[in-house]
Length: 169
Image 1 (cartoon, rainbow, N blue to C red):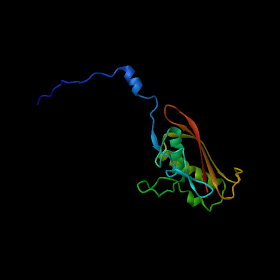
Image 2: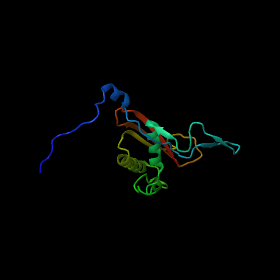
Image 3: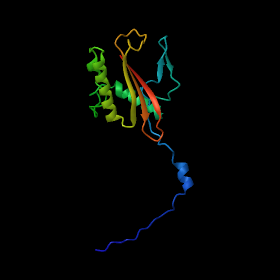
Image 4: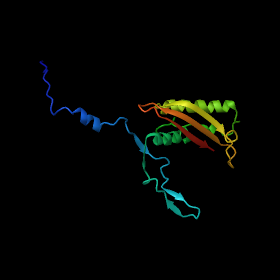
């Protein structure tokens, strides 16, 4: 059986100037704004007032705000609550009645770092702090709250550094 070595190419090659215009320096990824249903803000009189910063129930977010929203969603999600992703999220409820000492903080930090390595390989953790509201001098009527502060570096061409804070209580 004979094989043919002839190749036919159709069309023309794209010029370098067209490639530069059509391709962007950084790949722009988009996703949904979190929380999804924040279109209306409640006013003290009980009436609803439209939030003008969001354009609909399912608005898009780009870049670092998208990553911050996804990280907050990951940290606040309870492990086992997602249908198709049973390991998604953190099991912070098991630390609910534990004493707030160095061992508990160490276990929480290890749980966060393990989850970030699994679900957020696009960021590098520069620093991770877990504080209670008593250590952070937060003036809050709630007594047992945790503040998780992450300093992250984006692992793409931009290498942006940003902070994410999540209050758990």
